Image (cartoon, rainbow, N blue to C red):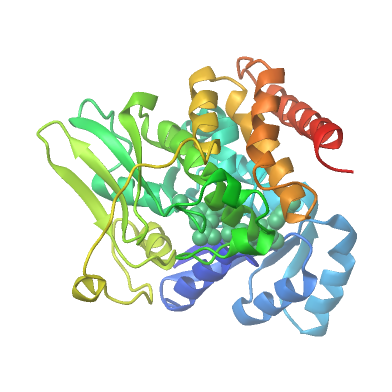
Amino acid sequence: MKRVAVLGATGSIGASALDVIARHPDRFAIAALSANRNVDALAALCVRHRPALAVIADAALESELRSKLAAANLPTRAASGVEGLREAAAGDANIVIAAIVGAAGLDSTLAAARAGKRLLLANKEAVVMAGPLLLDALRAGGGELVPIDSEHNAIFQCLPNGRPVLEKVGVRRIVLTASGGPFRGRTRAQLAAVTPDQACAHPKWVMGRKISVDSATLMNKGLEVIEAHWLFGARADQIDVVVHPQSIVHSLVEYADGSTLAQLGNPDMRTALAHALAWPERIESGVASLDLVRMGALQFEAPDRTTFACLDLAWRALAAGGTAPAILNAANEVAVAAFLAGSLPFLAIAEVIADTLDAMPAEPVDSLEALIYADLTARQHAQRMMRRAHCC
Ligand code: NAD
Ligand code: MG
């Protein structure tokens, strides 16, 4: 029986993970669940899954969580804050699902890696910010990382086991597929007045609001390019992006002999989660069979890098190295939050990020403190820039 901690249990990935886990009570038990501020949703998940530990990130809500758990007569202990999340990540679970959104997930993701867990990584912002530190932590802990992001999970499935040196196994390049998001084919003029609800209406995937906006700007693919660089040791010139609106081919690996291997499936994150939970075995995920005949045709096209400027900003940050990806990520988080709050136009998201990258030269990443400082400074710069140019 494997014990699983689900960090970010109340989110979209959390719900998909719990759905797969509940299909296999003979294999998996829930060790810990966490949420940001939604005590009711977390308590309801505790009633259903009876974990040993429940963590609410906002420490002011710990006593409310404790009373709700006691009222429901549960054996679950309540904890909160960074310490609580660390305990859930590094405690007695064998598998940790890192599904907190944004930089807020970095600390617990690193804690799980250091503790030698099987780390199911959905929280791409953590690896974008701190790729080298995360790899060091995995090496020190002796655990393993299985990617949950559908593209990286697909690549993982198309590569020989483990994290091979790409040249040694004859890989020519990695091709990440992108759905193109809800605004594929639009011009800049058509994007000037789009609303948060329009940006979050993704044609193929149902996801949290932050990643939905990232998909609409193509920053999601930019973050995934950086994620692929760290997870697979791929150089920037070995990574390509192709738009594939049906989201059936989740990504591809091209080998030196001209063979290209792809992983296909319906767009449902439960496939990646089931794969990573049971790997190297295969288990039922609840995802329907792929009906290729009904699908009829699959399309592929080049991304529109001029209209969706965020993609090239991510390549630029990857090339600059050091703290640049953390700066990119921080500015993006701040700009996306402002867009979702209705105080920043959609097209200004890329402007805020570009301006922040211009203002902050990349520094070497020699410690977690240096990264946290870069993250904080980038957030402050992005806020100042938005106050000057766009909002308030
Ligand atoms: P979501 O918004 O639906 O859920 C986020 C979860 O994180 C919630 O449980 C929330 O309570 C928790 N959380 C939010 N802020 C927090 C904070 N400050 N401290 C602690 N916990 C906090 O997001 P999601 O769509 O499930 O995405 C989660 C992560 O997975 C993101 O990094 C995203 O990029 C990645 N991802 C998601 C999908 C998807 O299909 N949803 C696919 C690939 C990768
Ligand atoms: Mg993805």
